[in-house]
Length: 476
Image 1 (spheres, rainbow, N blue to C red):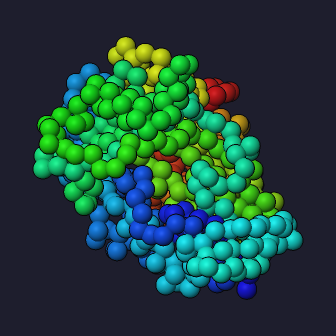
Image 2: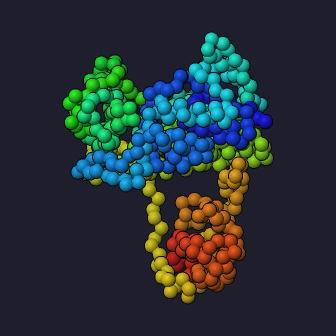
Image 3: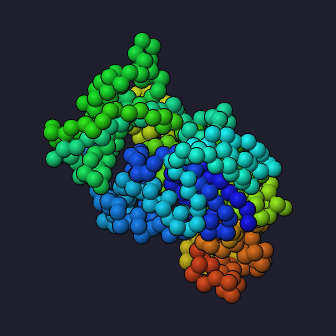
């Protein structure tokens, strides 16, 4: 049994620790703060609950969260109310949410030291030694693997590559009788705003501003009084506090870094960074918690592979690094597209800078799609541009190499589609068959309907091409 030490008890740290305990490792988690404590990130995207199923947190979190049915949005020109009848979005008290996740980890066998601080840390690929101080005493810990889940404060920042504009989040909490009962999102002239009604009846108001503009020359904005004055000035330019004349602010106006980044040294054979310690995405997505939990679950499989399958060390590290890089790029493109919508309506430098994210990949040229009759009458074959490659993938409790397909019509290599491995299907492709005949030939593995869907997907991306086309026609 390997010993694992996790530093940080937020959603990523608790989820990683819980999953490692489920995988049979001896896990200790060190958290410096007492829970519950107030924390940003109260809005949870719909994908969070399915992820929490893995560690058994879903029911307890769902029972205490507010369901989001409507959101007031003013992003382009007019204000609109967006409705989700399924109420998939959630709002939580992050102090309560984080405590629930940590308690679940403890119930699964994780040893929790809290509040406790790591005073000394030494080691490397041969293992780690820690000196942890808490409750007036010092404990020595030895670990085979170290997981850094300290968020933005984790580890040296020198290996972090900024993936977006430097952004500062200013925020404050309010009480009152007429506070909004639904989230509000608004694009301003030089900031964007987010209002979040919380389960305890309070309301969190956030303004996201450019760091270089907020800390401009001659106006450092570092004192509490100046910070509060400038934040309230920003709020007056928006409508996220409209109708809240009786609102009273709770505590000080606070500020925190909200710049997206990717840590390019996120893992070694004996260390792995999880959550915001490895990847921070643009807050516009409101899916930071989901990405942290999702990344922690993947990180646990990577760590399990590092500890138990030494022959797969390089494969596991390659998988984790590439998956984080791909997630970072995907979120950057998404955020740039939404900032660009405001640019199209006359948005200034704040929006223009953020819209200038990674260039979108040009879509493949349109292909003539086969209709139902052609699916049973047109013979097809594999594109001459198709390649078979090895791709690191999660398979059960380990990272392994799986055969995958690579083609210009795909954003990257693909090993699975709809839960099916693609390569075995393609390697047994009947020569000169129609898509319908191909789907029928797979019927011993997958239902005919699923086979037709996969064949159609490959046709639309040029992996399968009609024999009636000329050389290279219909391909990129």
